[in-house]
Length: 65
Image (cartoon, rainbow, N blue to C red; front, top):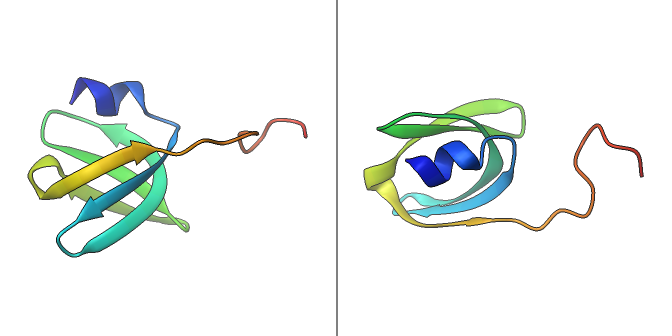
């Protein structure tokens, strides 16, 4: 959970048994993370996560180019 809390605001690729998700971490607590996936919030329970990786971004939305 602490890694997820540190990643709030960052883009992540999460692999679950149901398939991969790419979204921005909106919030995280001790049981789950909430991702913004194309404008829709999706809760991901940590027990469902097979792997997760922070994606490299050269510019963050809202920053100048």
